[in-house]
Image (cartoon, rainbow, N blue to C red; front, side, top):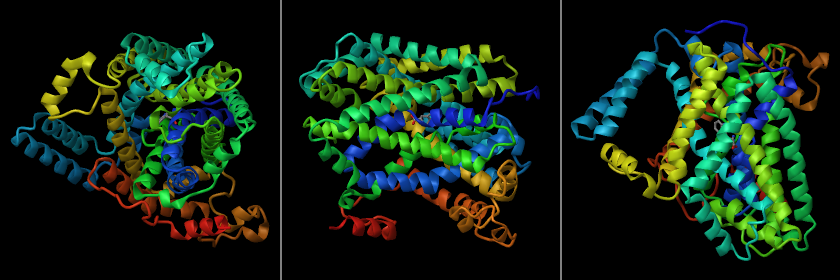
Length: 549
Ligand code: TRP
C-alpha cells in the first residue's frame, strides 16, 4: 500500500519546467509534427494545431499538473486518493461494458468478449482509479514503440558519424531505411541502447537523474535546432519553404486534419496518461501552476514550430517535396542533407537532435511506470526501474521485430487473430493504435474527473497555492498586465482565469475529445471535400483577410 515517506521533489521550479518540457518535446514535435504539417499543406495546419493546443491541450495539462501536486502521487495513487466512495456513473458504465462483453462472448468473440467483461468488472469495482491504471499501462505500450523509433535515431546518428548516409536519391535512402528497420537485429540492438539510457537516468531519481539530464539536454536541443535553422535559411531558394510553412492555404483543411491536429497536440504535450500527473506530483506548493503550464506548453509549441522551420526551407531549397509522410525525417532528410556541403555533419546534428528530444520523453514514460511501483507497491526505485525497463524492452522487441509486417513473429499474430478476429499490419501498428485509444480516452476521463468529480472548486484551491492572485483577477486585467493593480483586484470578478478554465474543463474539452475519440476508433467518419469550412470560421476569416493581397 501507499507509503508516506518523504518523497523526492524537483530541486527548483525551473527544473520542473525543463523536465516537463523535456517530456513534452520529443519525436512528436520533431518527427511527427513536420511530416503531418507537410501532408496537410503547411501553415493552415500549423494554425489549427496551435488552436488545439491552446484550447484543449492547455486546460487538460493544468488538470493533470494540479491533480499530481494535490495528491503527491503517481496516476494510480492520485485517482485512488480522490476516488469517490461510490459513483453511480462508474457503476452504470462498468455494468454496461460488462454486459457488452457478455454479449460478445455469446457471439463467440472470445478476445473482445473477455476483454470487455474484464474491463467492465474492473470499472465497477475500482471506478476512477482505473484511469490511473490505464495511464500506467499506456506508459508500457507507448514506450515500447517509442523506444524502437528512438532506437532508429541512435542507429542514424551512428550511420551519419560513419559516413553511411550519403544517398543520391530518395529511393536509395528509402531502400537503406527499410533495410535497417526491417532487420530485427539492428532494430533490437538500438532499441536496447535507448532503453538502457532511460533506465540509467530514471534509476538516479528525480533530482539526480531526470532533472539534471533535462537541464543539460534542453539547452543542447535548442542549440542543435538553431544550428539547423540557420543552415536551412541560408540556403539559396530557402524562401520557398518558408512561404509554404508560413502562408496558410485553408482549402487544405478538412475535419479529418483538425482531429489529427488534436491527437497530435495530446501526444506532443504528453497528455492523457498521467505523465504530467507524475511530474506534477514532485512540484512544491510554492510553484505557480498557471505560469508553469504556460511555459511548458509554450516551449513545446516553440520547438515544434522551430523544427518545421529547420526542415521545410531545406527540403524546398534542394528541390524535394514536403508531403512524403512518415518517412520525412528518416528518408527524405538524409537525401536532402546529402545535397548540402558537409551534408553528413548536418545529418549527424539532426539525428542527434531527434535522439536528445526522444530521450527526455522516454524517461518521462518510464517514470510513470516506476513511480507507480515505488509509491504504491513500496519497491525501491532501482528494482522498479530495472524490472520494468526490462519488461518494456521485451515488449519493444516485438515492435522492433514487426515494424512493417508480421513475418518475424507469426505466432503472436496467430494468437491475436484467434482472439480478436483480425490484426493491424504489424505489431508496431497495433501498439500505436492501442496507445492512440488510451490517450484520447485518458484525456477525456481526466478532464471529466477534474471538472465533475473532484470538482473545479477544489482544483482551483489547489492551483491558488503559489499562484498569487492569478486565479481570481479579471482575465482581462491579467492579460493587460494589471493583475496587481489595486483597482483591478475587487473580488466580484466572474471572468477569471479559474472560471474560464473551469468552463473549458467541464464542457469544451470533453466534447472536443469525444468527437476526436469517436473518430479515432472509427465510429465517426468526418470526411468531406477539401473545401469543407472549418469550425472556427471567425478566426479563419480573419486570418484569410490578413493574408489576402
Ligand atoms: N510528448 C512526447 C513527444 O512529443 C511523447 C511522450 C512522452 C508522451 N511522454 C508521453 C506522449 C506521455 C503521451 C503521453 O514525443
